[in-house]
Amino acid sequence: MTPLPLAGAGPGAPDRAPPTRLAQHRRSSNPSQRHVRNTNNSMPRSGSYLGPSLGCRDPDHIARWVAAMNAGKAKLHCTAIAKTTGAPCRKVPLKFANKCSIHCRGAERIKIDQLRLVWLQRKLRRRFFNIRERGALEAQISKIQRRALRWWWKIDPTLSGSTIALKSHDLARACAWLRDVARVEPDALTPRAFDQCLWAAALVLSRRYDDETGLLKVKRALQAEELWRSKTGQTP
Ligand SMILES: [Zn+2]
Image 1 (tube, rainbow, N blue to C red):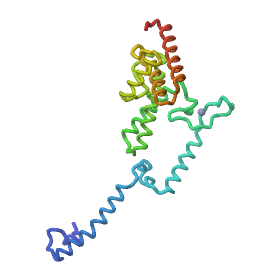
Image 2 (tube, rainbow, N blue to C red):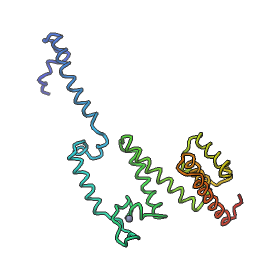
Image 3 (cartoon, rainbow, N blue to C red):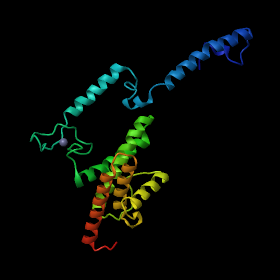
Image 4 (cartoon, rainbow, N blue to C red):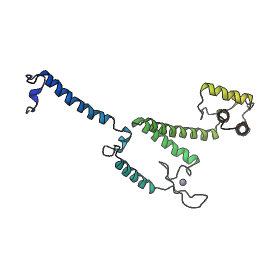
């Protein structure tokens, strides 16, 4: 092994330079190393999925990448025909589907959603995300889960679950509104009807519904409940 040219300057080597000079040398070399390391650490990690050549903030890189992605997407179209115009839909299909989010519905959507759910959950586990990206992914996941629950509730409204998350204080206020204003006993409802009534109460309490609209939503939830009971012979 050939000795490195600087091997003589190591800690075990005779110290020819005065200590002050050595200290100065260290001070002058370390900040630059630290600087390089800091620069690497401050690289936007959100762009790391673009790969080493594109994973940077260079606007030209990003613009090219976005243009290529859009060009790829532009080739894909939803296979549905728009009902209003009779023309083929121009929207981008959902992942795993050949239809867009508007035209992929019902049982077909639930099936595609399950594939998307696994894909999104895997994405969330494997990649680094900043808070905004993570939030967007989590929102997509909970949207899929809410849609699936509403779908299964059509078949069985007694399945436990909820599509609204209220803090205990707000939950108590919503239940009080249901009892006092809507004259509904929350404990007697199926999870589906309770969820629908809770949404109505929450929207009234946050002043996005007036009392009249809230009561109408409760009434519809109770009608659906009644219909299900009469069909299945369930007693309240
Ligand atoms: Zn479409």
